[in-house]
Length: 202
Ligand SMILES: [Zn+2]
Picture 1 (cartoon, rainbow, N blue to C red):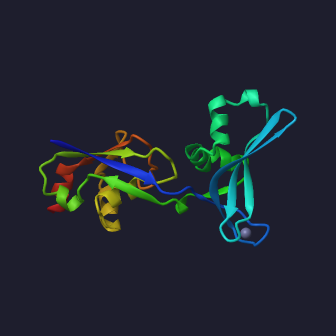
Picture 2: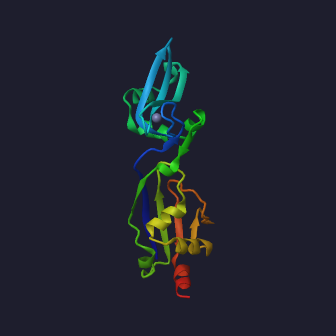
Picture 3: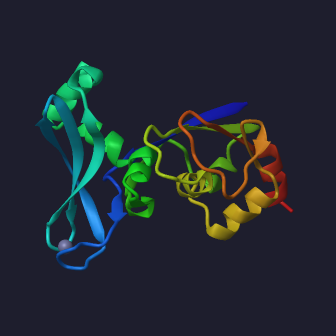
């Protein structure tokens, strides 16, 4: 018998960027969720506004520069004008935006809730399932490892997690899960419960 559980990652904040503040010397900026637009000679500049976490001075990260309005998707333009928060977050997590602006994004500053209906591994061991499938819902990518999610969801210690991974108890996309594997939206992690049970009885 197979039991399936959902691991849903709900992000709580956008990442901090590491950048030196010209005013106070602090090196952390947070996203204000606001855009700045400037129209000049029929071309548009659009920035995402960041604020220094210590003195609130502003840093503008370039999204579009010297772009003709007719070349920008109308809906997107509306999103910029209305400071649409989903759009702001999309850019705040974007690797492209960081690259263009030479910003160092600190993904470890992102906090999240893990919503799951999965029981602990201790409980799972008492069930009769042969296989457990964990479905990962992870719409916003911030460099999270699959192993971190499994550890949290199944309430495992670091040692228990390491042993289960080393023993090849998890497969993902038909390959054995590695410690360094990054999470992707929609991934299925399969756990061979018969093997886990056999090993835990040894
Ligand atoms: Zn500052």
